[in-house]
Every structure is written in structure tokens, then in C-alpha cells.
Length: 241
Ligand code: 6PG
Image (cartoon, rainbow, N blue to C red):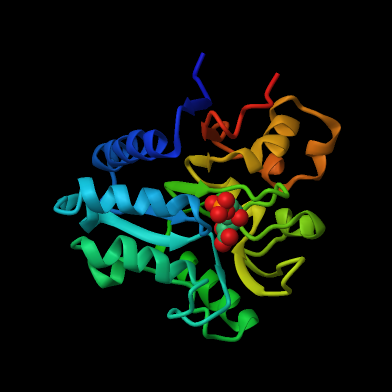
């Protein structure tokens, strides 16, 4: 029975082990291109730093195409830009062709950028079931159980017929462009990376299959090909029964 829940003592241990596993997946991927969609937030920061530290000279970056699961609609120089953080921590430290980095242009009009990014994805990625196929999508989970920029008050984005939609952060009102649930679920593989005690309540609701989980976007991600894998630290599962 395959294990879909991987537990680590700390975020550092999780990042180190996951990076090695991901590079192994990339190396053993049969295609010439590995299409990887990454999330924003703080959790990936450690991943980027470990990638840059352990694999900065890897030639594997030549085949990796970076996409974003979502982006805050701010300029690429803005402190909250998901691209800015990835660029500072990773892309600026590795040898990767510029054309392999497909950022969502946060400086653009959100609706127009959602359409433009969807078209780029359709152009570059293989299509199955009428949807693009990412080789791997890395997702985080917010304290409120959101994932990507699909928030609990915008669950309709899970079943949108579009590849990308414009979302609105429920507290700040910040506009986001996000992959939709259907686009995410069509990936070959989905991995959640969730760390910290602030995620414990929601993780428990999801893994204990409590009724509340039905209203958490992160629990509604159903990868068509295989069950999403969860990479968590002990702090995030401290409440699990
Ligand atoms: C974003 C992310 C978002 C993130 C979660 C978890 O742009 O904010 O895509 O979905 O993954 O909010 O964020 P942390 O990793 O900071 O906990």
C-alpha cells in the first residue's frame, strides 16, 4: 500500500528530503520537459533555498519548466510577488533557461492575464481529458484550508471550466490569478507541502474526515491519476488522532 502521508520532524528535514525526491523524479522523467507548477507563500522558500544549495550546478534545470499555481496581482518587484521570492532564492542561483520560467505577470490586468496565462499553458503543455497535464504540482494549504488561491468562500473555482481564474483574497481583497481545481486535478502528480502548528486544525479535519473538511478547498483536490501526497512536519499533524 503506497504511503501518501510523509511526516518529518521539521520543515528543514522535509525540505531536504523532498528536494532530493523531486530531483530524482525530474531525472527519471522520460520526457524532454518537466512541467512543474509551484505555489507561493512561505513554505516553498525553504525548498528554493535547499534547491539552490544542493543542486545549483545541476544540468536537470535545462528540462524543468516552472509555472505558478497562483500569483498575487502585484508587480514582480513587489514583496508579495511569488515570482520575486522564487527568483531571489532560486532562479538567480541556478543555470536555467529564461524561457523555462513562465511567470504570471502580476503587473497586468487580472482578467487579461488569466486568459493569457491559460493560453500559454495550453500552448506548452500536453493535453489529456481536455485539460493540460502538469507533471507535478506543488500545493500549500493556508490556515483557513485554502489552496492555490482557491479560498473557502470561492469554492466554485474548484469546478470552473477555465484553466485559470481571477480570485480575490477574502481578507485583503487582493486580486490573484489561480489555476482552477480542474486544471490542478489533471496533473500527473500533486504534492501538498504543509508545515507548522497553524495548519494542525485544518489538517486534522481533513485527515480525520471531519464534516468541516467538505468546506476546505485543500480537501477537495482530487488528482485524477493518483491520490495527492502530503509532506508535513510533526507540528502540522500534532492534533491528528
Ligand atoms: C499563495 C499560495 C497559497 C499558499 C498557502 C500556504 O500564493 O499564498 O499559493 O495557496 O500555498 O497560503 O502558505 P504558507 O506556505 O505561507 O503557509
